[in-house]
Image (cartoon, rainbow, N blue to C red; front, side, top):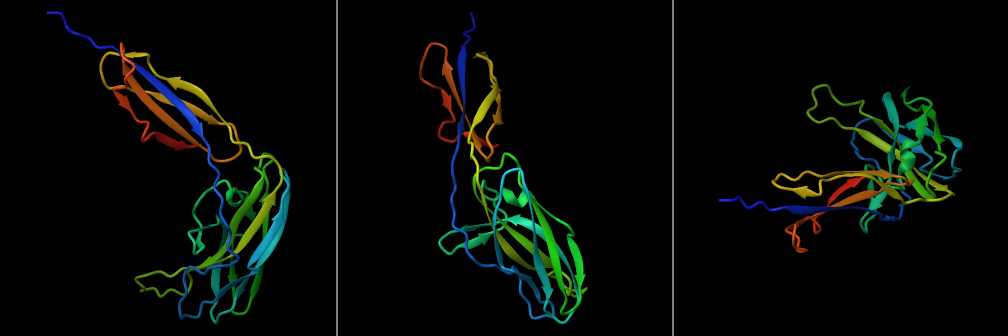
Length: 236
């Protein structure tokens, strides 16, 4: 008895999909933790606005102030900044096309010790890439300290405040991609079916590659499998 062998034709479509995300930045600075102890950390100013040019560097400063009654060690860093929902809740973790500037910032000195009443001036440099996308860029320059926690404390309290950095970059925003390779066999006799694709982001903003797989019998145009409703996605 002859065995029946089904031949399947598999079609793979790798499509680049691009989206633009917009948000409104709130003119405020938020302390993530507050307590009743002697640690009182402040930064000034609360915001700065910059006009940046692709391929250039900008050097700026802000101040960290010990307004409390005990000395502390502080650390500075740059984080993405955006807001969410109608209450303008701050988001210091979300990476978007508009928070790339957080990766462009470096500090002359990242840590320091402040006695009560002392003020430290912190210098930072923004190195703008030559291929920086046009538009707004937003980050928060944060100062934090965990000093003052008791040795036997069960919960460590981190005091963190920040200055919001608003920047505008002229130039061109490019949203483009290229399919480098689709590794897929035309015919499959037996499962499993394995396919993969290599996609290159040729633009200068973050993008998402969407992979759609459809499988057809050899002599039919009706798909027996498709992930079109829930395609695989990967940020580029």
